[in-house]
Image (cartoon, rainbow, N blue to C red):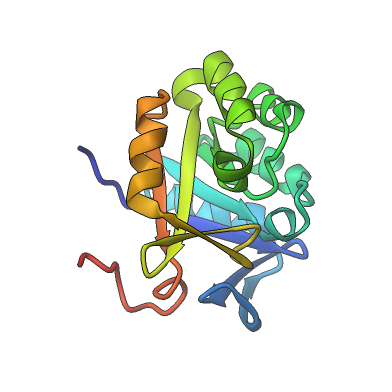
Length: 182
């Protein structure tokens, strides 16, 4: 099993932000230029970047795809993106436009047939994004807690062919307290 630390850019209203525990009312804006922030990460030695379209996560469809695609086009970074990828067409558009990997979150719970279809076509370029509160999966931009165990979901997804996972402990996200290794 491999663990990697990957710099992240969360985009809301076209800006780089940090939400504490996913709460919009606890937002810090870091930059109004996500592409410039990605370039800085690249200059600092990053080879991959994790981008989340928060508007997409909340609305169910990408809202900042133009910025994500610009990051992929204007840097040498491998770009993995999540947030609002809830159709085959959206996943395909990202992956055919230079994005390295798509992260499926809500779809892994709500639409396993779609996840299988995307995974069958794009294989290792599909990542399962599992976000959880106290080990229980949350979806739709973390506004809906499902009752599903994050560990059980990961095991089921692994059986279905997904090999890469991004896990977020929502209670720690944006707090700068470090990972919840427990």
